[in-house]
Amino acid sequence: MKYWRIAGSAILLSAFGCSMASASTLWQFWQAVQDHDPQLRFYRDRLQGASQAQPLALAALLPQVQADAALQWATNDETEREYSTGPLARIQAPYRSKSWQVQISQAVFNWAALQDYRASGDQVAAAAAQYQQSFQDLESAAIQAYVHWLVAAANLHNTRMAQRGFTHSAFTAKALYQSGKTGILGAEETQVALLSNQAGLAQSSAVLHAADATLQQFTGIVPSLHVPRLPQRLALPIHSLAYWLRLARIHSPILAAATADLHARQKQTSAAWGGFLPQLSLVLLHQWQSENGPLYYEIGNQSGSYSNPYRSNSNSVGLQLTWSIFSGGSQQAQLSQAQYRQEQAFASLQAERRSVEQSLRATFASYQSARHRAQLYRHALRVADRASKAADDGVRAGLVSENNAIIDRQNALQVRNELNQANADLLDSYATLSAAAGVLSPTVLHHVSRLLTTSTPSLPRTE
Image (cartoon, rainbow, N blue to C red; front, side, top):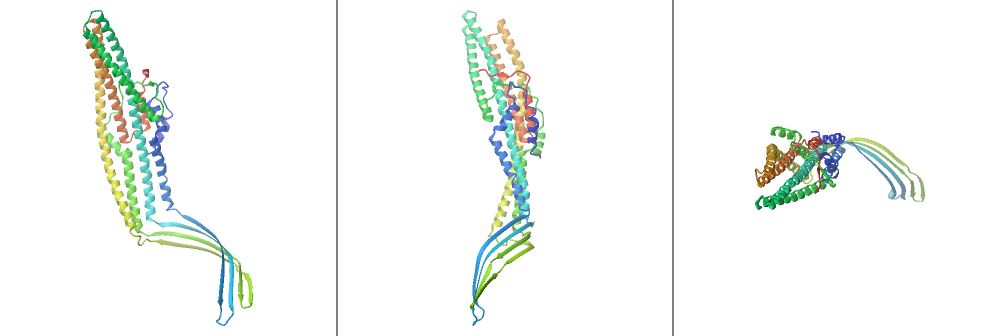
């Protein structure tokens, strides 16, 4: 699995952008989200830190070069008698000693270090998968927040358009009542419908303000005053559940991270076994030493001094065998701990597999349900619009009461808002499915953004 494909896709797609200057598209919103999300930066920094584990583990297998140097001043003062009846001899030798050495050691056999190095590669892979998962989770959350913003704006627009019809009906019914052509019942019914729609308008406005706050929380930027219209039909792909499950087994970052972690734990257990094995190293040593200083002697009545230089230069090559015989039980404890963590990683992988499969099944059911509801609501909206128009014509012709027109207008508004919600649920489920399967890349998000970008004008944000 190529964890870095998301970065390449983002670079390629950033060149396309979006030409709609009057409305903030999903792709533009996503670009702003990437620059402000702290969780994404956290996982990016974590990946960069984890990537240093491999060079650190490799260092134990590479040649180790160590250099030492020393400078010493000392004085030797000796007194002795050569024979029991001989004169007393005293020797005093102050000197300065200089020395340095260079040692090169290369691990020939170090099982623990080798397995730690192999485990570090799996640890980096697990961190990369976790970063990709956080990236896709953020994409999914961004899509859902943006779509809910579109739905809130569309519902507010629909309610505002219906308000005009209710206002006209209330004005007409009141005029007819005052002229004595109708009773008070019709006028009151239209007034109730008008006030009810005004309450719905206030609620829709509050929902839109909440959606604005959510978008601003993602980006730190106040949302655009021009909201793109939410399309009534979304051409999203139709795939079977088996297709999504197959994608998850190949691309899911959650499963990839759990698998890489299990592989790392297995190698760490093998490294713990290496604590019971010997370590063999090749050691090359070069030493140099020099001593300079006078030597003073005094034997009986005779004394004198002379120079006493000393210099040594040596080279050696050897094999060093290190084998821990007894360490107080620490090696056994490390092995038991590594085995426990390996079993824990295996159980975690099994749990993640079940969790991903359950999430895909539940989300796929929601996806199918939202698709079916959207189809039904589109058909119902066509019927409701015809019924509302017919009722308005019937009221003007005196064939039906104002109450019938109110009911038809309310039905059309409800169906239109329900269609918006069904489309939002459809997009939410699609984003969640793609993220769970590990295929929600910037390319997919750009495709969704193009689906939401229609040729119709954007909705104005006038209150």
